[in-house]
Amino acid sequence: VWDIISFAKKRNILFGVRGSAAACIVLYCLGITAVDPIENKLVFERFLNLERQELPDIDLDFQDDRRDEVIAYVSQKYGQDHVAQIITFGTLGARAAIRDVGRALGMPYGDVDRVARLVPYSPTMTLTRALDENNELKNIYSEDAVVRNLVDSARRVEGVARHASTHAAGVVISREPLTKYVPLQGGSKVNGQESVMTQFSMGDIARIGLLKMDFLGLANLTILGKAKEIIYQNHGVDIDLYNIPMDDA
Image 1 (cartoon, rainbow, N blue to C red):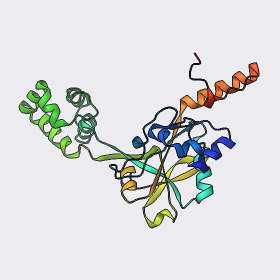
Image 2 (cartoon, one colour):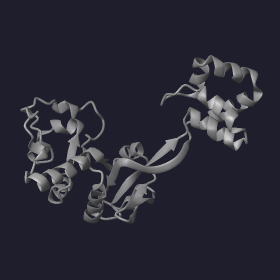
Image 3 (cartoon, one colour):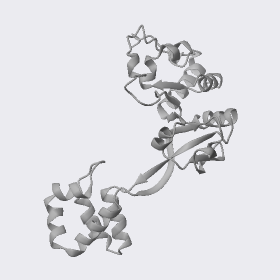
């Protein structure tokens, strides 16, 4: 982590360490974080706790317009066959399952849309719950055989992976070539070149013991970086974003 942050500092890439890692004084001493956990009375056990059976997380945020530079550096430093981004799977939710199955069955869009809209909106909603919570959906399910077939078919594919994409933050680094542990495939482009991503998701990567890093690109940091440049160009003031007084209004 120190190596990656050192690279970001040398290249003037804005970064931030998010979450419980700020409670670790070792990270503060290494210059990875800018917050003194003793002075600010942060709880170390939030970062490292014997009750938590997994490695502690150090979530790193970078300017979203320069995140690719960080990934390219890590890949060059540790070896292209030792570094990969991580896959994530989009699964069929309740509404999406209704729409996809209706399309596959050749049903009119309006009929399918009417049923899909009766499913209450919630990220954790299931078709079973929707039938329990929405009386109108329950009634047409009981009375209309076509709707019943649509809903029952959708329940069979609900939760199934629909598509794969690159995880917004996850990067895995291994001492040995990753092909010894995980299958790989082509991912999104980094600096104009196609990157590599694992075919195991974030949870599986952690379970087999590989080092998982979080490199999240934040537009907020990009905006701050541009603002810092404009202020320096127009007023000659070089603002240190990491040392702004706490009482600065």
